[in-house]
Image (cartoon, rainbow, N blue to C red; front, side, top):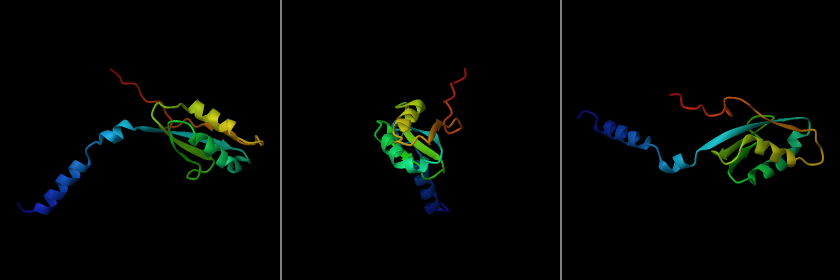
Length: 115
């Protein structure tokens, strides 16, 4: 064999790429909520607190994309409408923050299998 070390690395990398059953069982979906209005940034702590209390919500990110909340949920655990409603209920006295579900490739429904 000309390159025994390289062959070992290739074998190791091929095994590292095999699907992990533990990961397959915890599939997540991302729901993007649009936060629009002058008071939304002040409402971030309330929105994050309300959403993270929901069973099935793994992570809420209001920092990565301006004027958005990115919510990672366990697949099938909760729908976008319920997330929007929970976030809206969390708004404090000021109602100058509108929360809407973003319809995009991030939140697109799963395609059904074609025969």
